[in-house]
Image: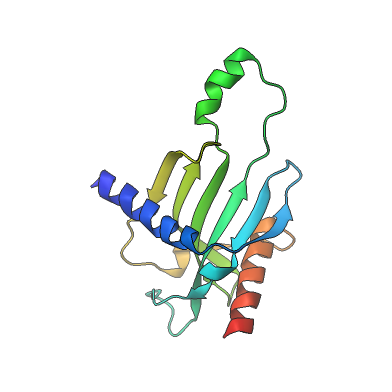
Length: 153
């Protein structure tokens, strides 16, 4: 079952990675770059059980981590498991600027999959969503995805 979820998570994100149009949204103080795949923003048919007729959207985001600067021999050996970037699929509620992470795949610098995960929840409620805080990168990503979705609607 775990193997199937890994395949599904990888497949869901790989499909969105085929038609990629990454747009840089922000850079953190640590040097991570956050981007949206503009081609992945679309209406979702996933219903939230305790919320009626809310227009949710799905989007793929990427977080690219900064390269490590000083490398010793020991660091190079450990680098095989170091995350270069992480692709994530979010379900977003534009109504309250919240999101639910549906899947992610972490990649090394050689584009090798290090770890992947996909939600196994068949039914979602509003309690599953994380409300973003103002003036955060999460809020910027959610607001930008919602803005683009509204423009393309």
